[in-house]
Structures are given as structure tokens and as C-alpha cells.
Image (cartoon, one colour):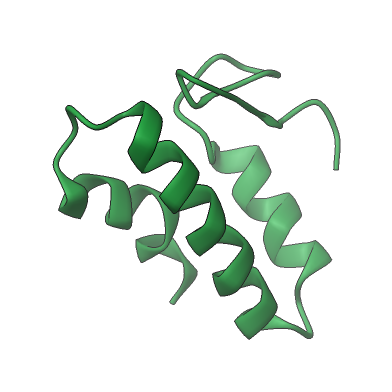
Length: 72
């Protein structure tokens, strides 16, 4: 992947500064995991758990949508 990596504890994108996973990160992740969608979901679920510790003030549903909702 390129510079569109997560920056904890804010979980913003190191490349564009928006919430991670940003649009470019999502496209890169889909391309990287194109033949392994379950692995992508597991990776993002692990990131969701880590982000949940740092972003505990955000509703769980919002984090779920941000990290996993777009993968369907």
C-alpha cells in the first residue's frame, strides 16, 4: 500500500488526513485482497478493535460502518 495508512490514535489517513480507511485506502485494500475477501474482513475487524480502544467516544455502529460496512 501507499501512504494511505492509518495513524493511531486518531485513525486518520497518513496520506490525505481524512478518516481511515479513506477512499484511496479502500480501493487499494480491495485490490490487494481481491481474491481474499474474508482475509480483508478479518484485517479490518482487527483494525476496528484497535480503533475502538482509541475512539471509544464514537458509537460502535459508526465505527463498524467506517471499517467494515463498505466491504460488502
